[in-house]
Image (cartoon, rainbow, N blue to C red):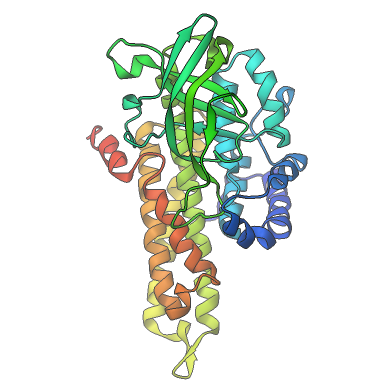
Length: 380
């Protein structure tokens, strides 16, 4: 297969350090994290101590100042290790980016160093019980009251929500009747009166990643918490980062597919059926070959998208294509791999079973795949 040429020697060295951290400090605790439905707070501080958070944030704000390939390495290694609990990508590559790209200097200095060190965990609150992928239909409102905003509403399916110290809240601040022009992004700190969190939601998969519902009942925040200081900019702010967010899902999906294939190759070589290994049967070899070929082709497209990201040229259509293709593929791959594991593939002690339930959500979050098809169809 084609060698991947997008990474430098520095990226490769970084990968070794990340892999060691995940294997030694995350994998041994992951089953317990799944039971408690969130990771330990200490793992955030440890990741910050090692320099694994906010990798693209400039050094003046506490980050590493690296390119997005460093973020890619971290995401890939999480998938390879089956470590789905820590929501590092949402924290570092979504929340931190909103603050870095659109925040005031005061907002950047107040939050980015804390996020880079792991002292503060970040979340973004978009989805509501009745809105799903339709961000223009959000009902959470932030009403002006002198020098403050008063926020009312609730959000659901919020990654990192349970442990979050700072939340970027998507809220309506206007009444123009044009949904996109009324949306603003407002920073809400944990501990504000009226801001409450439900217990982590009981999900089918990704059980170690804390995901919860957030409630805002007359939550008062200063106007200085408005991201960027100008009302009505929320929708373009969201849209500017959406391509990268969708590519993140593609990166996580294709690397999860690669991990599933590796686990299955290893398993089929050692599992004996009717006197010979499962891997010796033509059906097995052809299935594995087909999966390997599909993964290789999709990986090449994702890598091309990463090159475009580095050049600030990734189009919404390409990002949607990557997200659609990679998330559909990983679900296909893990399903075939479960079958090749036989009954053991349905046992949670095997990583392929956890991958089966963990990756199904990739076709839903970040905009459902039906939305991705609609975005691509508009370019026909």
